Structure formats: C-alpha cells, structure tokens
Image (cartoon, rainbow, N blue to C red):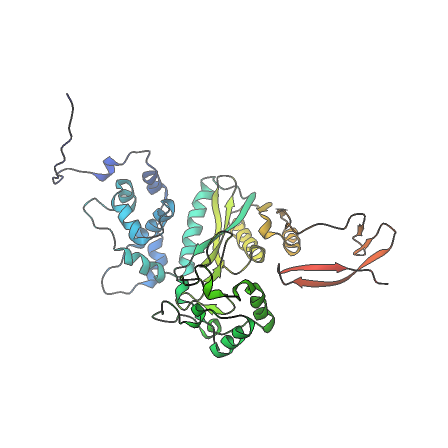
Length: 387
C-alpha cells in the first residue's frame, strides 16, 4: 500500500535535543572538544554592572566559528541558518523553543571586543590543535586573499585639499562627468582622521596616476558604461572611504575595483591547521608583509615549543630582501623568484668576494649603485663598466 505522510504540527511533550544529534556528528564532537569557559574572565571588563544582559560571549564566539565553518558572512543569514540546524543549536547550547540572538547583536558585539580578545581566542584554539598533535610546525605555507570591506565605492571622497587636487587632475587628464559630481552615496559620518583625509602623495606619485589613466583621457563620457556607478577612476592616492578609512582600493585580474583588506594566512602542512592570520591594507604587496608575518608566526610556534624550518610561498613574496631576511631567521625559503628575474648575463661570472662580474673577455664589471624600482617596489643593484 502506498504511504502518504501527513504533517500535523503539535507540541512536544517529551523531546531531548541531545538525543536527536548523532554521536558522530561534527558539532557534537566539537562541543565536547572545545572549552571556552575562560572567555567569561577574558571579556568581563567590557561589560557594565547594570542594565540588560548581553549575549553570552561563549555563544558569540561559537557563532563566529559556525559562520567560518559554514562559509556564511552575513550575520542575518547566520542566525537563520543556525535556527534550522538541530546540531548547531545543540553546539550553541540552545533548545528548539529558545530564540537565538538578534543578528544586529552579533555585529555590535564584534565591535565591542578589541583585537586582543580575538587574538587570545585564536591562540587558545591553536593550542588545542597543538595538544591534539595536529600541528608539526616544521613547514608553514603563506598566502593572501582579498577580503571585501564593509564600505561602498559610491561613498568615496576626494582627499583634501580638494581644490588643489582637482586643479592638478584637470591638468593631467580630462575629468568625466562622473568625477565632477558629488559621491553617489553621502556617508552619515566621517570616521577618518586628518591624516587619512589629506593628500600624502608627492608630485611624482600624482603624475604616475596621470600616466596610468591615459586611456581614460579621451572621450571618457562616451565610453561604454561611463554612466554606471563606480566607473570613475579612483586611486588610494586621491580618494578615501569616510565609512571605513582603513579600507583600500584594490583589484585582482578579471575582477572589479573594490574596497578591500588583504588577509595574510599561514597554514601548517601537517593537517592544514591555520597557524596565523592577519589583515593588512590592501594597497600593500605580499613581499612587503612577509617579514612581519614571519616574526609573528615564529613567536607563536616558539611559544608552543615547535621549531619552524621551511617557509613556502608563491612568487608574490619573492624579493632579495626577503630571501636574506629568511636566511637570517634560520629558515629555508621555498619561494620562486619573480617572473622578471633573469639571473646574471650569459657568459658573465659573478665574484662574490668583490661583488662584481667578470665578462667573457676578462674585464671587471663593478657594482655601481643600489636603487628602488618604483614599479615593483623592490631594491635592485646596478653593475656597469665605464670607458
């Protein structure tokens, strides 16, 4: 006989959430392994002694962890998702008839705690991974990824002094109608300080902006998409975000220009445990951040009694300074050189003791100077024979 399930909602007289979550369930196992009781003492100073009770700090950090594990970046979607999952409710310590925190509470609590609190939680979880034998420390990989800032390109403001900047831009390129207009979305408040609103670029850097925008200097307003939001040319040298002054304009190949942060992530190769993570300004290059990453990660591993030997990264982290820095730190670098690296000229022999080259005819090509390549922001050495 064919069966037909008829749903009729009723009140549960006898229901235990713990009995409905299987023993092998991931969140049940995580609940038994993760002890966050120390958070009460860590966050006590950020609350008052009176007023309405806040969200439990343990629940807040568990929600942050669920958002990472489930790849959910919206607090509103995170709360909706948790309410539909019995295993996550059990992990959070909520029963099926309890209402989860309001999504805006998650956002406000995230702003309440300083960076040191999140760093302490990360270190505690990392320590648990070390104690469980999941981290070897021997080989660490480093990579970066842009993280979209919670700010709109439409609200960008010109850096002051505005009159001087606009006068300069009118000299170097034609200004489109989009540039002459005010921001699309005027921010309610300006969180930036005086330094972030002021132009710090010199004349040479501003002229470099002109050379990069030559293709924009002819008939900008007639170009396809010239009337679309975000089509005006912007630069970190000339614009800032009043709602998120630390965000920077950046772009990846094939992607649109956005306000981003640059996340630098380190992973232990034993069981792919994240060993370190930090956000940097998105207008910086990977090779500029490597020394700070190495110092911080080496200190973290040393505190756990682990010895770091190998550093693995992609070409973006390569530079002569970084190779020398890693050698001084006692680390073996597995970082391929930049694509522009060609080595020494063919037939020439490098003499390390005297820091010079010898050409095939036996003539000495001495070192002449060291300079900073403005395009790649790397230091280079010049060898030149005269006469």
